[in-house]
Image 1 (cartoon, rainbow, N blue to C red):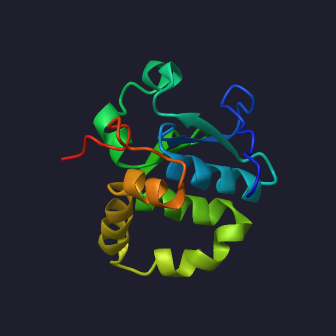
Image 2 (spheres, helix red, strand yellow):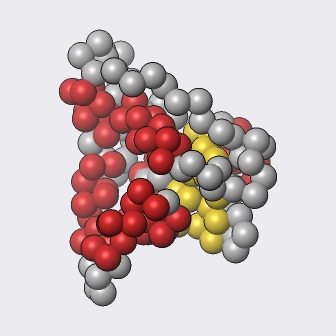
Image 3 (cartoon, rainbow, N blue to C red):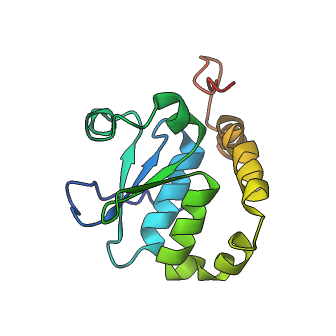
Length: 147
């Protein structure tokens, strides 16, 4: 089993783009650790949506929206990308994801990618529970407040 990757914070890399993810979700943590390993050039920093930094510096991002999808903030342009749009953005930034770029950018397919993204996102706690045999959801920690 791979060792956890120490994630770089926005304060560590002030020129990096910021990936905002659900730090209470084991599936999400695994995905951002993978992104961190693939980013050999310090292009990305990572912060949990539950960290007070997010509400303080990005109050326009609604907590419920953050719970629905990962966001990437392009600090140079100030752009915000959520869900499948964030994946599109990351596919352009990380060479390891360039193979996905043509598929993610097929004209008129963004609604399909967004739908697929949301199907996985709303089941992420169940997915992480299935992947981790040591996980216990009896305390309601796997419930997600999505409509």
